[in-house]
Length: 154
Image (tube, rainbow, N blue to C red; front, side):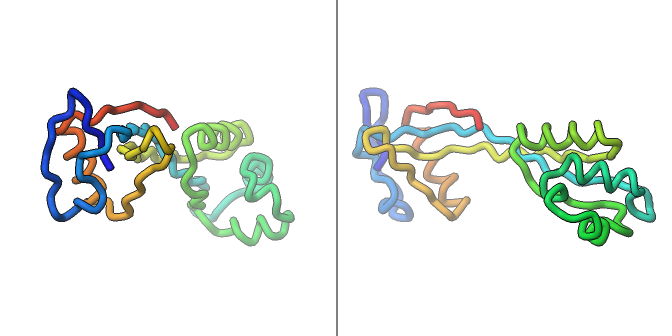
């Protein structure tokens, strides 16, 4: 459960999440995980990519490099936009730079997915709460009561 240290005020956890946290164990901290996710989309003309752009995509994007020329052509032909998916910021930057160097236009949409993750420092166990609203409520309550915060960049 969550920590009680000399700086943490005792509290009664709501019945709603007492099974997750009752404020009695001193080993818990909140990890503040700073994470950026980047969605990448290739942008072509209205009729789709040119042969040079298809070659550029195959050179720059690992998923397309693994395809044969005919498979890449079949997937890209006639598409003005091709969504590549979500990537961590380092990988997205690498792919976007490679696309630009190979003559392709690419859009980057950055999403902040930062948040808190409860961690027991004694056992190195994290408390994963799949319900986002409940997770936020538990972490906010822990912050209100002085639970220590550690920062992590992803």
